[in-house]
Image (tube, rainbow, N blue to C red; front, side):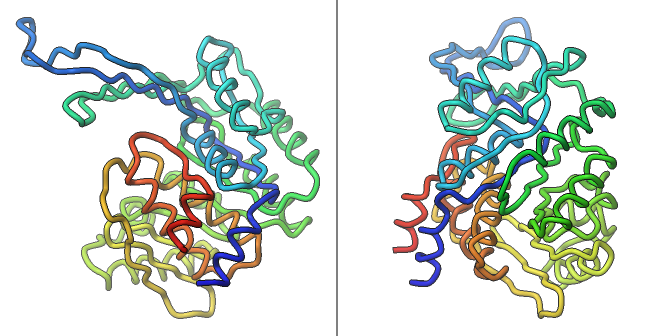
Length: 320
């Protein structure tokens, strides 16, 4: 435990690139006192609104609040929501030099309506067409301009930023420069990730990729071993209240039980996991111990409302 705390204190100034689908999360809070006469739906009297970085932007936010230096690469539209997102990223001291504006796309916006202490509705405004070759080339050029990267995170939400050609370029760059690649995956793109350092599917994603119905620990292990074999990458399956399962090349599977004391909101927990994994692995922590760290970080996150990043001080306090 003392060794892990020592590693946490080395998170400072680790340079992590995050490439993926940038989003802005909007939260509308209100009180529900009656049902509409127009339809059987609750009427929300709005009391507050707030915005937060989402998707790959939330991964970068977690990198920053955990002490690392986050370099963010992705696409936004030329719209009002781009300005809000960039302001949020500036306040978190995240490098935005790698963000490109595509006038044919909108900035992805997820709006969540919260009433009675629960989410009542989510509205997504998005354009999920794949980006063109000119954006792929520019993203790769911007990535290669950053010196001394410790790790690259691919945050794939299947909104069009991650393409096969982009993954190919990132893998070639990382291999040439001995840089870790961690992928938060989407099943439809799973073949593109082959050969990266680590892939972190959740239970549902693991089922879709492998075709194995996960009902118990034996089926999780079966799915994990299949992913490990077919994708030639280390695998961590995140299984909610069942914790995490680590599948590492040449080693036996490791189960890490969940540590959350109270689950309030799981939104963004996967972003916290990949951010803390990247920082831990960048410090030389072995995969199982890095998973222990990210498991505790995820336990802190699910106790918060919305896509709230985890701070290094909170993680240190949990360990101490």
